[in-house]
Image (cartoon, each protein chain N blue to C red):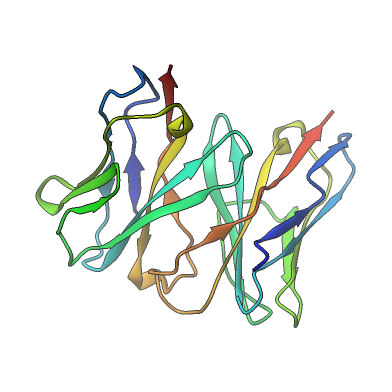
Length: 115
Length: 117
């Protein structure tokens, strides 16, 4: 079956612009989470969605937002881009809900460069 | 708050050597889950194993083995007879049951493993 698909894979933006990243989870997976990966901070949790509801958000400013659609596809948006937002953004999906035991399946990521 | 430490930033060994990647964690939860993921140059994190806090049995899968010790809060990963294809960045991660899956994984900084032919 198809894995987690993220688009676009690469993009370049300039400071002050905004960007929208898309994630299609594995069919049947209802939970989608997003992570930011940078050389300095490593992998950091951004937010998690389940059944179109954001259940939690990591320690990121309000410029970072997201949503999940009824088909479980998710988008994340970063407004007013800063140089420090340059990163690999990884999306992950899992089957269900309410357990820390969920195994996440990750996509290949969207690499954002902010100039 | 939870924390995962991978003290080894980079390890380089020659093919066929055994190598152990260290992982130490901190959590106040009594129920938690530990994971190892592999990240090849393509960027996609690949799941390797999950362990829950109540299961301290060591696990072996082919050339891979994992040693979970609650007494030392460690979950180490050993690759036996390493191969060039094992070259990647390996991440240890923690999830607390109290978060209900909504808190995400807490990752270590990763260990870059280089297997030289």
